[in-house]
Amino acid sequence: MLRFHFSAEDLARTRVAAAPHPLWEIAASLHRFQTPAGRWAYAHWYRTARERLREAGLESAVRQFLLPLFPRASYWPDFLTPLEGVSGLEAGLGAILATPPERVTAELATLARIRRVPPHLARLPERGARAELVSVLRAYHRAVIEPHEEWMHESVHAERLRLGRHLLDGGTEGLLGGLGPTVRWHHPRLEIGTYPTRQDVRLEGRGLLLIPSYFCWKGPVSLADPALPPVLTYSLHHEPPRPAPGSASLEVLLGRARAAVLRATAAGATTTEAAHRAGVTPATATHHTTALRDAGLITSHRHGNTVIHTLTLLGATMVSRNMKEAPPGTAG
Image 1 (cartoon, rainbow, N blue to C red):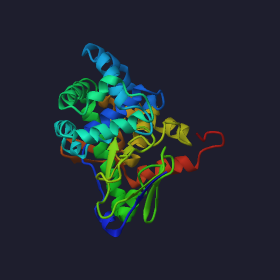
Image 2 (cartoon, rainbow, N blue to C red):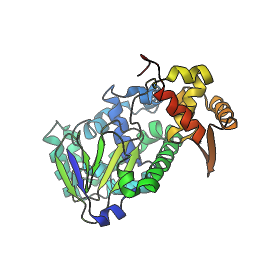
Image 3 (cartoon, one colour):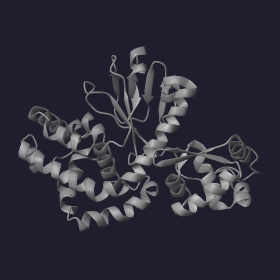
Image 4 (cartoon, rainbow, N blue to C red):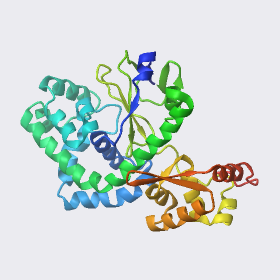
């Protein structure tokens, strides 16, 4: 279990990252190669990621450098996901390069206690070896993360809007209580019961940075060293897709795709998100959102270059009533 202990000052200093953290996304995306768990959620990425790595000549470097350093395990070195990454990829890579050699040595030793570390990675305390690692991380990001950055940024933006509603309705405690089914708020603690190690982090006025992650799947992740600036990286995907109770009724009324678009807007969704969840093209999703808006079921608001769709009271009532009035045998 992982527990964060909050004071009133920590509640005031809790915040949500404004954009995807590129190095946490690299770490989590490498975990997607190491397990089939949740692959449905990343199918559109996974189909092309291996091909892009092959075309970029990165398959060997990923096997030799990245997979051993980012195992899907209870630990990987903290210096690989520095706080500076909130300012962008290059800031994060610069922080990796600037990590004190003694810290790199200590964290590699911790990794070696739980799994074998290839001998060539023992050179990472040397700046030259870390410069090579930084080059591989940059190339990996360019090959398999950058092509999906627009979708990732829209997903994080929609999550911030969702959390903003929790914050407005319930304050910081409402926000902390809305992070997904594996995270529980029990004042004055935030608890992750499924965490693979037992750890208590006393924030002591530092606050907590919440990092919504596109590639993180299910279990939230934090840093191993409690002395580092506290962060919690958690999945944007909370539940697998399954037919909602009463889904047949909405599908009969609206059609399968339009009903899926309507449900997608329940927590706020961009057109791209709605298209992804409904399994249609963005152009088709635009057609459906226009029809739903004209029918008074959703409302749309522009934020910069992004349009966010949310349910109106009528739309929310329709979705809620459709769930409650599901005939026997239709529940998911």
